[in-house]
Length: 376
Ligand SMILES: Cc1ncc(COP(=O)(O)O)c(C=O)c1O
Image: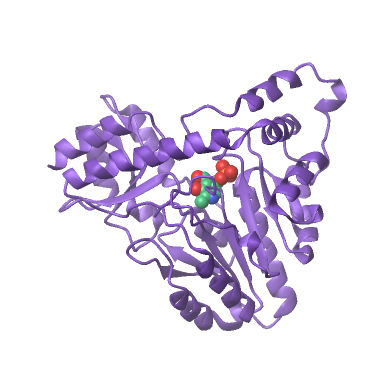
């Protein structure tokens, strides 16, 4: 297997090599501070006993799992601490295939139903896992019509292993409401499949509509999450999966055999930050992002662009008249405007003409002005 270099690396490299000042709006790394308690936790760790530098339990520090379980109102045995939401998604998808195989030995083409546009690591993970993937086009406002998912799930029939969704959504910014999530869980349930809900942007819901899939009263839901975005620590690699009991064993085995465990100092610091950080930290970050969305979409209006108004998350997708969001045009924006976004093609077929902008830079206003004057 060859190394499959993600497109965003390519764009970031292109932007870094440009012969001018470029505002990076490619990747979703927060530009704000982690909680104070997180830094304190890491600083304290330096003086910990040598024992604290040895293997933690593979499934995660007991106290961290308990803290997560209490907050999510689930049995602690269902929680596995992972290397970010990325690993949690992998464990969820691999586990869905195991479960599918156990239940329907006849199926030769286990299938994931995904959305289009899609967070590109889901189809890539499907490929890695040798599974089939089918897409359901999102509505123009980015939301998902459960009837369309039902149609695709019906077409997949016994092959359906899981429906994989992300809310608040990367790249559309849609927040799926509770009724939608309940319907998606029911559709998966009808086929004895799993609903996987990636909730890594749960702290960035601008509408107040978001509700975790864990609050649904159903069994076959896996929720994945991480502290990467909520605590602005994408580099620390601490996330988790909450799995149905029957999927825990497989996930623990995979996690142990691939990673042994997740970094102990990182888990300890996250634990302290969870305990010490009040709601105002999250609220401040949410408000900052929501202000940026307003600034950026005002400029898109001035530029005459079409865009999806985000209800959550870090991203805005926009389409400029007679300027399709191809890689070539994204490079033109780097060179001529000094703004780097992501070509729509990275997220599937439905938004090939669009460009995704990540609003995790303090220079959103400047980027917005640059785009508005280029396109006006
Ligand atoms: C939808 C989604 N899921 C998962 C991830 C990866 O999260 P983590 O850094 O915690 O692995 C990202 C990162 O951008 C994301 O956008």
